[in-house]
Image (tube, rainbow, N blue to C red):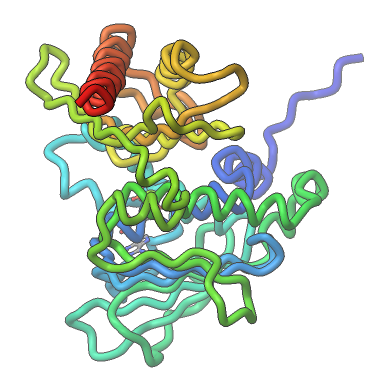
Length: 345
Ligand code: ADP
Ligand code: MG
């Protein structure tokens, strides 16, 4: 006999939805870093314990959260970024769904301390299941925001079990921060393990992308870089800026740092096309270093194909891939030509 259909309890539904948006500490951190950058921060520091599963804390010096907004920050589909855009469509295309903090609060204990430049003091509040618990309380603090996420997936036993290795989670956290530190050179990023005095990652205010490549990926690589620069003056309005390694350099590990409209994403078509191109220049099993910052007209990008926004789709993908590989091929040929020139001279 068929069992009657029952609607799931709302807290269960919310928790399932949250678990789709927040997969692990690294992608929770990605959302928190993006928020800190959206708030105009020039300094972002992260402290983690247990690979970010026990504690994931991020402090920024951005514009802060107004006291009046405390009850709303962790509410699903609540965003302050609507007003920054002309219409709802551009909100959709930039992926501001007001979902990140809400999701995190459904699967972890969240504490937020924040101060706007106008406020006399900072305020702190604790959150659970999308709601502020009690009232935000006045406290000491600088302008900016600290978000502390504790015991991630404490209420999702299966997920917690699946994330066994804290060192694996820590490496993923480090990877996310490395990418954002590279893309946002000039903003000071730091990452520390709880209780350690030494930072694992530490970039400086005012550093250039090249400075950060040297710092984060090694000085050897930084001497073998080719600049890629495709201005937006093409029919797709696509611009591409970044660096790739030249034919002298190769790595055992694939390093592909791709950003689309300031968000770190994987674009398999771009990654694969570049891989094929470099296979003409590098020995088998050797990889180049690739960092590309791609800017596309927002209405041509769909960021809502995946709950975690880790992949995007965009229009004219094949043509834009060719634009990118043409620019890299030209840079490689150019470097090759000048090398032969110098060696002959
Ligand atoms: P979204 O970024 O899509 O708006 P989030 O859930 O990530 O949604 O954040 C909700 C809101 O909380 C943001 O719109 C913003 O107003 C506020 N917020 C979150 N993090 C910060 C921060 N670090 N500094 C200032 N405001 C923040
Ligand atoms: Mg956000």
